[in-house]
Length: 172
Image (cartoon, rainbow, N blue to C red; front, side):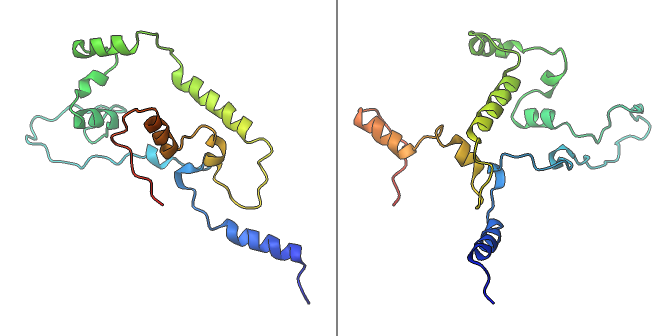
């Protein structure tokens, strides 16, 4: 007894559908589970140098073994972690930089507005593309008109006599 051709095609499509690895290009939320990036391991416990002079306990407050990722990153990059404290303001050494970067105004909700615009853009791009027989790269599909071909841009600049000193070679 032979299986109908449609059944064979559906089974083949299901078999191939599990062969993709989208990685970070998958635009959908991964689920309702915990966010593994929100879990911070505690710093290792150390013995105090003097047991007679111990810090006062802070119930419900901070701990000596608590992690402070932002402050640690600022310190690792050569900055002052104390600048992150609330009300610290902009240090005098950075005032010129802040003034130059905000000379055209600084909207208060840049990240929120950009996230909303991007969600609307992806929704417009995904119309009539919800049903697929084979898995597709949704990131590439949504942003295909927004991407640049680096080699075509290099050629464009070269034909207009613009310098392209760090342009990579074209691989065949």
